[in-house]
Length: 227
Image (cartoon, rainbow, N blue to C red; front, side):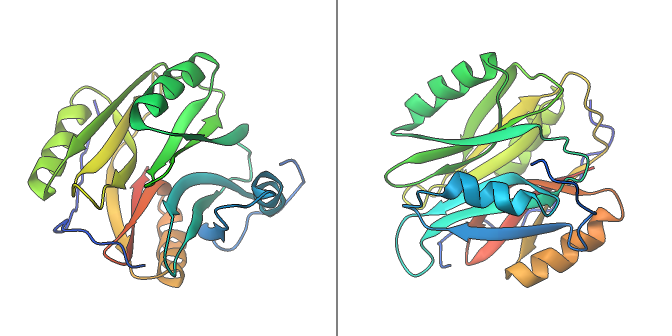
C-alpha cells in the first residue's frame, strides 16, 4: 500500500479553453510539444525530440478550435527507463479497453489516454517492469474523484492518467498495479501555461517528483505527479 497519500484537487467543473542518442540531462525536467492532428510524421518528430533526453509520458488531444492538436508531455529520461513507446487510436471506449487488454499481453503498458470526440488515443510505453492489471473508472465531482483515488490506493493501484469528458462532465481515470514499484506519494498539480509547468516540474524533479498523465481543463494543465 502506498505509505502516504497526498491529493490536492480543486473544484472540477470543467470547460476546455484552451532514442538512442547519447545526451546530457536537460535543464528543463518536463515540457510539452504540440503536434497537428493529421501529422504524418508524429513518430519521427517525437523520436527526434527524444534525442534531447526526454521520453513521452502523457497525452491530450483537442480536436477542434484554436488549440487543436495532439499535446504530448515529455519527462527527462536520460537513463532510457522507457524502452519504447507508441500511440494507438481507437474508435470507441469499448474498442480502447479491448485494445489495452491486448497490448498489455504484448508487454505494452498504457501510460496515458485522451478521449476525443472522434477518436480515443492511448499512449503506450515499454519498461523493464511488466504490468498485467489495470482499471478504468468514471467519476463526476471532486469528492467522488478523491474517494476513487483513495479506494484504489488501498488496493495498491497507481493512477496513471485521466481524461475529462466535456459532454458528460465525467473524469475517466485509469489505474495500473505495478508489482514492484515503490511509490511514497502522488499528487495533482495545476498550471496556467506551459512556462509555469516547466518551471515548477523542474523544481519538483529535484525533490524526486516525476509527471505521468495529464489533461487540459478550464484552460489549465492538470498533471499527475509521483515519487
